[in-house]
Amino acid sequence: MNRSSGIRPRPLRRPVRGPALPAAVLLALVLAGCSDPEGAGSAHGEPELGEVPVAPATASLSLPLDAYTDTDAETVRMGQVQQRLLSRCMARYGFPYEEVRPSGSAGAQGPEGRHRVLFGAADPEFAAAHGYDVNAGKGPPVRPPAAPLSESAALVMHGERPGGQQGAAQPPDAPSEEEAAQVDSGIDVGGQKVPVGGCMREAYRKLYAPTKDSVDLLFPFGLASEAHERSKGDSRVTEVLKNWSACMEKSGYTGLKDPYEVVQKLGLEADPGGPKAVTAAKADVACKREVNLVGIWAAVEAAYQKRLVEEQAETLALYKKQREARYKLAAGLL
Image (tube, rainbow, N blue to C red; front, top):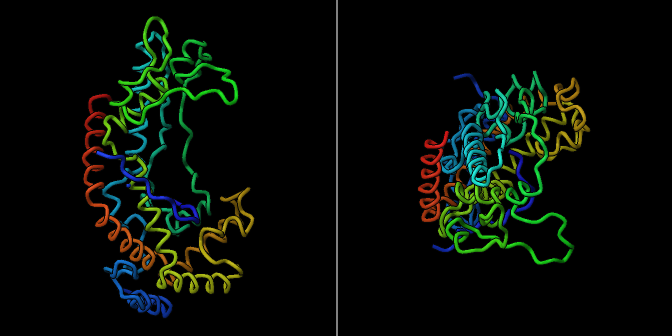
């Protein structure tokens, strides 16, 4: 995933996230083992690296925070669970709700795995077939045609009355389902109290925030984003980016500093899977493999993730336990 250029604030837990190698690859491997002036592995210096793979397929990459994040298929499954909880909530008030279902190809991991676009285009076969079109082969969610919600059904769904005036007091809400039980939404439909935030918020809370000590769903993602941003400033990554940029320049693509700006700087947004994009993507991937960008950057990012996992071990242990509870809930609903 292409993460933002700025360091994301870390979400906090609420009280109780064979062949010979090219010369450029050999140089990159040496640089990957260099020490930081502040002391490699120190709390504030550049961490020591583990094994640095050579031109690995992204499907083979394994990062420390993978243990706390869902695959595409798991994300789709949790979305279905949330839809089922929403449908059950609406049914309590006598309103039918057609669940959104993924298309046949939605959530497929594909050949590159969960890290397939972490460092931009990386798979030679995908680049040759689709260029930079990361959505190639994916279908949109499938939702049966549904009649517009009545005013009462919309009230139950969203938990707020339509047409609220600007500046009016916000409707009540609650961070967790445990706390929601103590909050009056002030809305009744058919003699039943509507949950705060409506059925949409209830479905989310039941799945992701059932208790007061529920860890923010985005906590591991925030840590992964932080590790990625730290890795960008690491001397071993900045060096391999220079090598990649020089390789791209030899291929006729000048002024590129990192893989995340290729599509925009080359004007490929309108047709990311077209012939021009395919040619650029093939050169991009070839250069990454020549300088071992994916291998080195993945090793550096893994080192920063490992440091953050150690720092946040207590919260991550609680998050993992709550994630397992979500899977157990899913098993009983789907």
